Image (cartoon, rainbow, N blue to C red; front, side):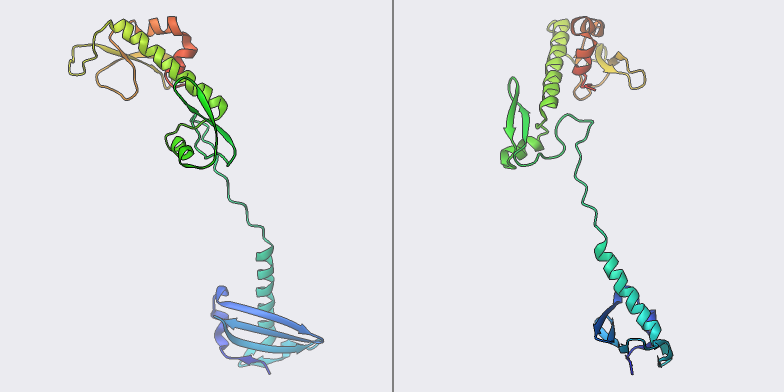
Length: 229
């Protein structure tokens, strides 16, 4: 006779139930646990009809089916391959590395005059370059250096046109100009400025854009604006 301690186990959540099935010769033993407590212990001989056996109003074959379903689910869960965690991907909109290199992988940082190659070891020096956004692939390092050179050239043009005059943001009458790329037109434009914007290069001459285009060309002028794509 099967042993059922808690007849209302059917109301239990599936995660609270566990089961075992053990076959020895013609005999199969089924055990069902609720929160690790044995609530069903049933032996059935091969060929025996468990649907005719009841205990406290519960059909034994129903419990056997529940046990088989639990065991099948456990088997399926173990067979499901868990997807590998996604590796971080380099942000294509920035030049510096946004993903740390692998150990032994080369990277570049910008020195006084050129890009310097290092091999990533994950040490403090490598991490400092990475945290300062000063680690690049070989190609992106070359682009970053070109941007720096173009910005220096544009600043020199502005300084030459300013002819020693200082930008005075307290002087509202002093006209100041900066060059930018139009968000919608994609053209290089010039605008008057009334307050100091971060990283802009300012000139006191209205001819700033015209002279810069003539001396630098459009491609280098875009680089000076940080546009490299």
